[in-house]
Image (cartoon, rainbow, N blue to C red; front, side, top):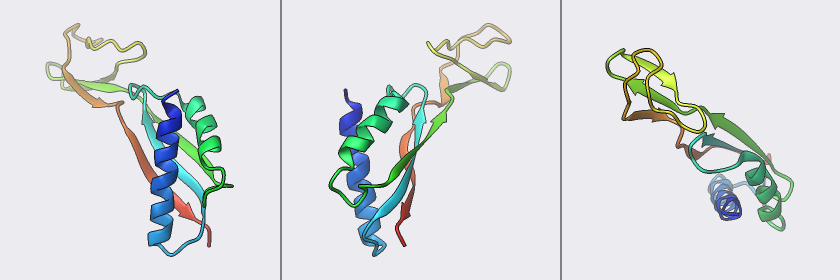
Length: 115
């Protein structure tokens, strides 16, 4: 389960952010996870609970914002959802797209420090 290594990295980065802000703890961490990132949100939440134990995030919650995978069709000048499993053919003109606009994100977007 690679989610544990991802959760460990999230905990480490959130601790560093909290230290830089002069806080001793973190109450929540928000992450964006793209549909095509290869991360299972429920597994990440579980792994986060394991990784946070004994850290400044011991009671923190993980907020996962899921990002839909979307591609761009140059012919139609429109974005479309690629779905899961991904299908990169435009539903309007039936041409393939090579321009993925979203869905591969895996980033921390917020760390809420304990006041």
